[in-house]
Amino acid sequence: MMHDAYIEELSACLQRYGLESKQISEIVAEVESHIAESGESPLEAFGPPEAYAEERVMAHERTAGGKTQYRTFRATAFDEMGILREAGKAGWELLDVAALALYCQRPWDLKEARKWEYVRRVGLNRNAIIQEMMAEQWEPCGNWTPFHYFKRPLKGTIEL
Image (tube, rainbow, N blue to C red; front, side, top):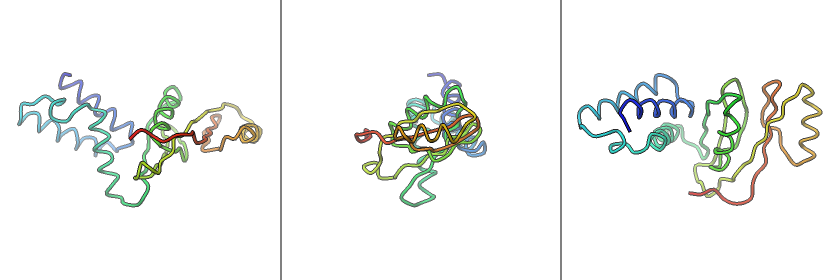
C-alpha cells in the first residue's frame, strides 16, 4: 500500500470513528514522522489502516475509564445501515443519532457484549411507526426526521 493511500485510509477510518480533526492530525503526523525516520512502509510499521485506527481510538477511549466504551461513527444516509450492520456484529449498541453521527456503546469486556441488528424506517408519522415496530419486538434507538432507527439484540456472542 502506498504511503499516501495508507494515510488517506487511516484518516478516513479515524474520522469515521468520531475523532476530532486535531486528534487525527496528531496521529497522522506521528505515522508520517515514524515512516520518514525508519524508512519502513506504513503497513509494515503499523499494520492495516483500519486495525491501527481501531487500536488508536480504543487507546483514546480507555483514558476515559468506566466499564463502557463509547464511539461516534460518522455516517451518511447512504452508508449508515452498512456501518450499523458491521457495528452491531461487533457488539456496538446504537444509543442515538444525529446529522452524520451514530452514537454507540459497548462493554469493554467483550464477553459481556451482545450482537445487535438495526433497521431504519422513513416516514413522518413517528408515533405510528414506533407502535408498529415495537409490536414486532424492535426498540426505538434514534430519530432524525424523517428517519427512525430501531434495534434488537441478536442471539450469539461477538467474535473476539
